[in-house]
Amino acid sequence: MKRIKITVLRKVSHKDLMEKYENPMEHACDMEEGQVFIANGWQRPEGLCESAWETMSPFVMALAHGAEDFYGGWMKNPKSAMISCNDGFRPVSFLIETLDGEVPV
Image 1 (spheres, rainbow, N blue to C red):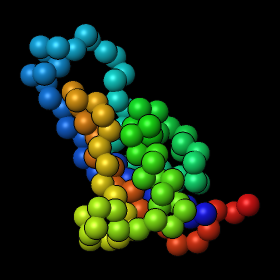
Image 2 (cartoon, rainbow, N blue to C red; image 1 turned 60 degrees about the vertical axis):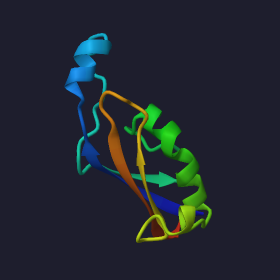
Image 3 (cartoon, one colour; image 1 turned 45 degrees about the vertical axis):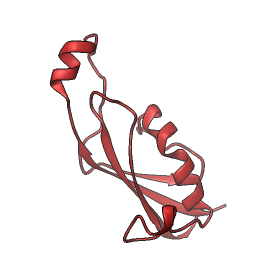
Image 4 (spheres, rainbow, N blue to C red; image 1 turned 180 degrees about the vertical axis):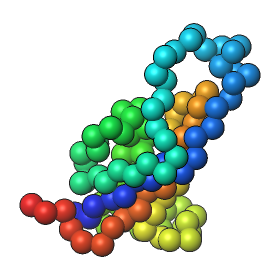
């Protein structure tokens, strides 16, 4: 099984939607652009948002088991995927990439 690198590339805030629809929250999202996580197969990396993990984990699992070329050429690097979390107020975009080498057993 391959290790997977997860990089936070972009974090967007839709303040107009937050003001109109969201209840105030203190720590809605602690992800920072440039932050990197390494997934060892099915395990959510420590510190990675649980909601984001639920969205990306099928892609992480597929890549960890050797899958490539999602949706027939969507990504320039066939061993990667660009996934956003499901937070409609502050979506975070993640680049998910297969690393060389296997997860140590």
